[in-house]
Amino acid sequence: MNEPSVTVATGGTTETLKKFRPGLEGVVAAETALSHVDGTRGVLLIGGYPVEEIAPQAAFEEVVHLLWQGTRATEREVASLRQALAAQRALPAATVALLERVAAARKSPMDALRIAAGTLDLDAPDKEWDGLALRLVARMPTVVATYWRLLHGLTPVEPDAGLGDTANYLYMLTGEMPEDAKVRGLETYLNTVSDHGLNASTFAARVIIATQSDLVSAIVGAIGALKGPLHGGAPGPALDMVFEIGRPEAAEAYLRAKLERGERLMGFGHRVYKVRDPRAEVLAAAAAEMFAADVAGQELYGLAKSVEATAIRLLEEYKPGRRLQTNVEFFTALLLHGLGLESALFTPTFAVGRTVGWIAHCREQMATNRLIRPEARYVGPVYTTW
Ligand SMILES: CC(C)(COP(=O)(O)OP(=O)(O)OC[C@H]1O[C@@H](n2cnc3c(N)ncnc32)[C@H](O)[C@@H]1OP(=O)(O)O)[C@@H](O)C(=O)NCCC(=O)NCCS
Image 1 (spheres, rainbow, N blue to C red):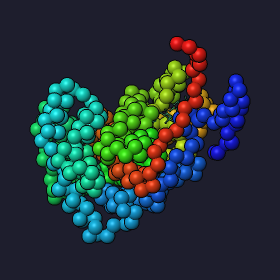
Image 2: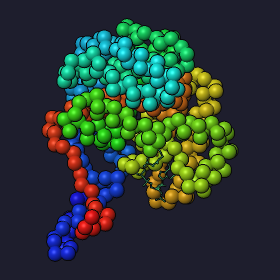
Image 3: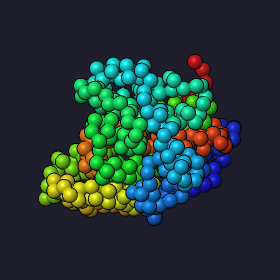
Image 4: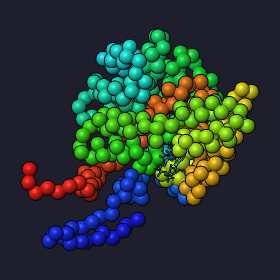
């Protein structure tokens, strides 16, 4: 969308009026080999592979390797990465002490993650990128699980080096060995959200690292961007909505009332996708599989599908031509709920998966770095004297 700029003469000077694009919509601000989002055809490639292929089959560590090294890992490489991550899971003592204070202040898990993430390099040598990247990916789940337990008056569970990253996350949250089906469900989720083009939090990370700041600062900034309900904060409200609706027959009246009040339906609409978000498909399939042997889960799944169909019909009625479809968050909510995670854990768990992509983007940015510095058009007054 490169539109020509317009040159005008104003008050004796010549100025170039560049096109202002609110929200940078349609602006290409980076080149990436990490993921490809085709919003018109509903395609997402992660490290070159269709999300439908990679997400339900790969181990999380395989996706880490793919995004960081650009190649498919051998079995040996997966084993060695798994070991390296497992060795870094324990938090610095000061981070745990900080989380205790944060829990006493009853902050949300996402706030706690933002606060604690800034301390994850306390034991890392300065500017040692690879070790720091491992620490961040290995410790984000530990921060979330430790904080969750502290918040609920429970003793934090030490990481188990014998478990893969995903199984260990569930183990540290619950204190129980997770079932294989649950590990697979969560692994599919983490893989699905590992990277997604130049989304808001990834862009924030790239802006920060492009100033030659440090990796931890970039991740803290990205967490801040992810937290908002227009980005990663939507799945909790999306699930609340399904529960409030309660039964399929109530969906139309509930959703219509929301739209009449001018409210947004969480879990629908996307800046880039104008067709169904391919991640929604992957997560819906994972949720259906997980609920296969669970009657209450199947009922909830049926309700969610019916709410989805009604929402899409009403969105077309209220916002004709906007092509508002289901996004990743709607089925994220269902899948993570099915895994036994409470809704306050949804966005922090998104951060756990997306950290891999944030780090990969920071590395990519630094490979050909140029400071990211767009312009603003001045629309304020011009005075001649003070
Ligand atoms: C994701 C999102 C921010 C993308 O928005 P965007 O590209 O900036 O689109 P806009 O905010 O310009 O919205 C375009 C129009 O569609 C409407 N719209 C967009 N998403 C909507 C939703 N979920 N429910 C109701 N209306 C919606 C807007 O109100 C606007 O209508 P208008 O032109 O009559 O004012 C937006 O779709 C949204 O808020 N979705 C709900 C939150 C969510 O699920 N976030 C997770 C994203 S993965």
